[in-house]
Image 1 (spheres, rainbow, N blue to C red):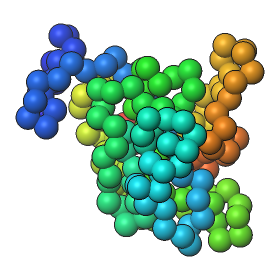
Image 2: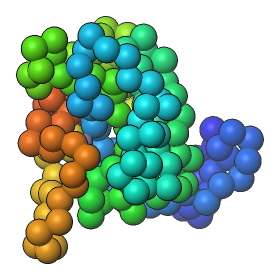
Image 3: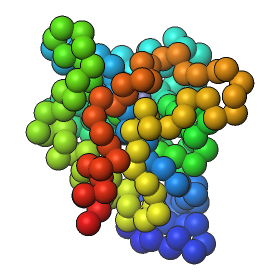
Image 4: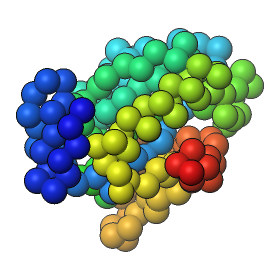
Length: 169
Ligand SMILES: [Zn+2]
């Protein structure tokens, strides 16, 4: 990875790539129960059902800790209304406990993978702040439109800002 932020270019997967200006890394949960599998393909199906062209996140972290790539980083995502242009979307599988209540259901492997992924993203986007979906106003422009695909009140079901401020130190 060559970080040449001044020109907005970097080598990603061996290819010269124009990077977007990323201000935010937005953490999501899939809002699915911890005791069921929700695969990357399931995410894709759900997002297409909502009218998106394909899966809307950039990365998806399974309960095993496996990281699935979704949209390329240079493509604008569809995960956080009003913030997609300047953000990377990271989602973990889960966020709802066995009883249907919002909860931080991350496995140790998921948490480790998430921290490792964010560290990698910071090498390309050193200015990016990490926030949870719920930390962002759902309706900045006041037009009454908020995302329908997630329970934004809770997503990602843990306090992302202090966790990643600690990681950054
Ligand atoms: Zn979300």
